[in-house]
Image 1 (cartoon, helix red, strand yellow):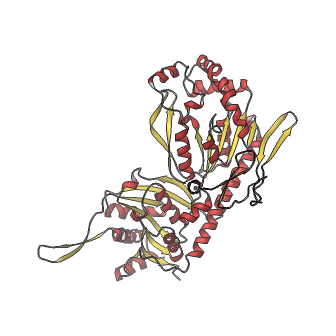
Image 2 (tube, helix red, strand yellow):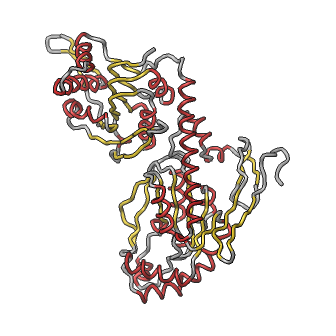
Image 3 (cartoon, helix red, strand yellow):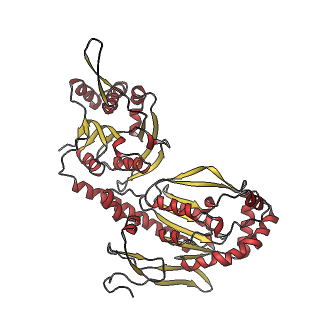
Amino acid sequence: MGDPRLPHVKTSLNLRFKYLRKPVCYFKVAALRPWPPFAFVKQRTRDWTVLPLVEEEMLELESHVTIQKRAYYSPPWADVSIIAVAGSSGSGKSTLSQAIVKKLNLPWVVILSMDSFYKTLTAEQSKLAFANEYDFDSPDAIDFDILVDRLRDLKAGKRAEIPVYSFQKHQRLPQTTSIYSPHVLILEGIFALYDPRVIKLLDMGIYCEADADTCLSRRIVRDVRERGRDIEGCIKQWFGFVKPNFEKYVEPQRKVADLIVPRGIENRVALDMMVQFIEKKLFEKSTHHREALSRLEATCKEQPLSDRVVILDDTPQLKFMNTILQDIDTSAEDFIFYFDRLAALIIEQYITQAKSKTPQGHKYQGLKPKGEVSAVIVLRGGSAFESALRKTIPDCRTGRLLIQSDFSTGEPELHYLRIPEDIHEHESVLLLDTQMASGGAALMAVQVLVDHGVSLERIVLATYSAGRVGLHRLMTVFPEITVVISVRILWT
């Protein structure tokens, strides 16, 4: 019944829903409540188990609360919710996963197939594979170490490089596919609920059930159409490897699943249940993110402005250009011309200043390069800096990211990302945006760069206008970055 010192930890309750002879689904409901920091509650087993939490496990426990205490800001993709879909080959796992994504219609719900994690074959194994005599349906064929490593990276909010496996060549290809910032990840494969390390990372486990004849027919259609195999080879593999391994390795995963779905995509009740579960998870993440931003604003309101915030000198030339830019009667041509001039001044301000002597002995104030420089443009406003960037640093490599606020909640959301792969090696990284009010988008943009290995000391945010609240939020979370602005707004 659990430790009497922890009255909020209860045993799990197993509920089964059945309609006559055809079950809709089997669902395990666990009474989930907050646990104290000195205990780690494992809810994947039949009963609750309370274990002492050592320091190493505390570091691995990537929850919203721990991330906030460590970094003060937790993006929505930190502690990604992972849902595993297991079942026999041909049971409808991929179709069910795609139906969930289609019904949600959100860019941050991603499917990860375990087919990508097949081990690289030796020459002898490859020869057996082409003869349909290699066992792809055994757990030994899956590289679980790499799979767990990638899942842990995603749980920590980092970018994960996913291997690509070719069934035509029966080899792992040299290129990889990047996955970054999913809020929900659907892990799909026959062994999705097999490895205990994977089960520990899951939020929900689903097991698909289907008739054996149906599974065989689906597998034949898929392998012939998508993997270039012949019907005879498919049948040979089915009776030689697939069916025996299903009874030995796949079917036992049914016991650890939270939701058992018969008839796959045809089971509308189970599909709606899964969609509602994911929507609830997304809503919780959104609520937590907005609450964290609000708390951050309250804690940093009275703090002085950081000395790493550089404001352009209020010279007559700057006043003149700002007057033209803020005048409602300014023509489009004049606005573009003067903004390009001002943007160039903002970009030049961040470059390290250098003093040198002329042959006549006079001192000259100039600029010196700081190694390779790249710029990340925050769409859409940041694209206004691009012309000035090309004039100031012609060989600068650029990337782009699109962050938009939800129209109903105001929460910033990452929609698009493309940055140089070696950006973490660059001497300086410019982050360009035209304005910053609340600082939510700027926080997310800097976090994206940090997740891709860029050190905070190398990040420079260049913006035309900024509000005091947004600056305080940003500098409280990331005090090591540099911010260059031209105009201060909402300063009181």
